[in-house]
Amino acid sequence: MSKISVQLGERSYEIVIEPGVLDRAGAEISSMHRGGTVAVISNPRVAGLYASALTRSLDAAGIPHSVFAVPMGERYKSLSTCRKLYEHFLDIKLDRAGMVIALGGGVIGDLAGFTAGTFVRGVDFVQIPTTLLAQVDASVGGKTAVDLPRGKNLVGVFHQPKRVLIDTNTLKSLPKRELRAGLAEVFKHGIIHDQYLFDFTRDNAEALLNAEPTALEVVIRRSCEFKADVVRRDERESGLRAILNFGHTIGHAIETLTGYSRFKHGEAVSMGMAAAARLSAVWGYCTQDACNNLITLLEAAGLPVQLPSMERDSCLAAIQKDKKRALGTIRMVLMKSIGEVFIEEISTEKLASAFKDTLQMQ
Ligand SMILES: NC(=O)c1ccc[n+]([C@@H]2O[C@H](COP(=O)([O-])OP(=O)(O)OC[C@H]3O[C@@H](n4cnc5c(N)ncnc54)[C@H](O)[C@@H]3O)[C@@H](O)[C@H]2O)c1
Ligand SMILES: [Zn+2]
Image (cartoon, rainbow, N blue to C red; front, side, top):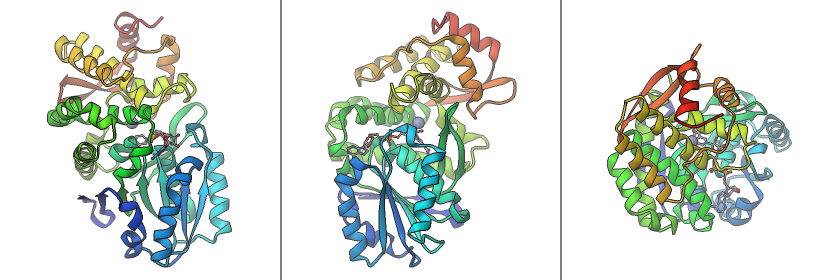
């Protein structure tokens, strides 16, 4: 069992990583529960697997609750789903003494977090992430958002959870493709900051893809420690926190241009990281060897590294709509070496010509 503290003054909270913690979630949250109804937000698959363990533990702790299942898929991370959730919150008389619990992957975490952060100007929120991607990344840090048809995560709020409960046993039912997608964000943390994590993930990729609990706990703990530290130093992404977006500028464009359905978020991030490494090498920021090393390892873990065919202009337009853009230029996270990245403002013209020459976009 590991406990990591996210130090944010009065918004501080703990991340608990423990196989089986779901069975005692009620006891874990009872000290912070203020007496009102708890809305558990999940989806049909995850609720079918894990909602009864959670509701049993809430019953045992005497916490009143209801479960709402949102249909599966990124396209339900939308304002129209939020509206249904707000209606449900009114139906169950959720108020500021209540709480919202996200039980699911990053889609459910973002959606439940956003509705918790906006309903009656904010109710308490607990994350119980059930995908590797959500356990190593999405559930920590308080960024919540929904998508608009023209771009991802365009409407959101910062709303920190009161606690994050990570039950590594839930990953046993996660399809391999989802585990792989989660590994992409673990590699990302390694590339940004932690050569040990990168090497460990490479050397234990098979154990991780077999949901082996000891290996999982190492990568989840190190990822959460790293993310907690970045968030502590820059909660609202005024600078440093943007390094976490390595691979995401092009990754988000891929997701937007392929309708959020062809690739998993982590797969898009993998292609985005490979593209960012290629650009870093061609612009002379990192060696070709470091770039090749990264791409070989992503491929060895079964992650995609070649961009899908995309029109250069559409890709640039999608990037410009992405909220991480600074006026007139594109803010990109580039690589110096495995374990070190930096942020650079790149002119649209420079990016357009590199898209053509280096990334072979038409
Ligand atoms: N807020 C943040 O900081 C942040 C960071 C990274 C990603 N995200 C967001 O997270 C989302 C992606 O999250 P994701 O990769 O977890 O995808 P997801 O939430 O879509 O989950 C993937 C699939 O796995 C299923 N699933 C979840 N847990 C399961 C389990 N234990 N067993 C079996 N099936 C299970 C889900 O039903 C779903 O079909 C994107 O919307 C992305 O923008 C947010
Ligand atoms: Zn991501």
